[in-house]
Length: 98
Image (cartoon, rainbow, N blue to C red; front, side, top):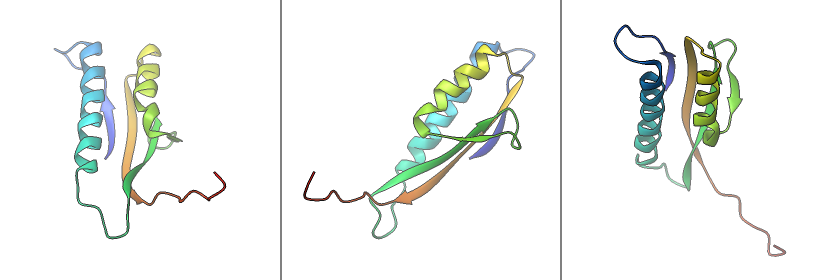
């Protein structure tokens, strides 16, 4: 998902648009996690970027998406860019010393 969310609408409140954006991201991540994994892969990881525009977007952790959207809300942004790309990953094996 590479999308710019507009936070202005003639009939919907600002808070409703923020909640709709959070819900859309949550549903997208859920859908991606349910996809079949390639051979030799343990889980789906996500590469995420967030910013006011695609040019200003910086890398963030998947768990910080809602925090960043809330920060955009507190700063009254008119729109924000969010990029969430699913990446197949393998868990690192622990050494016997741990």
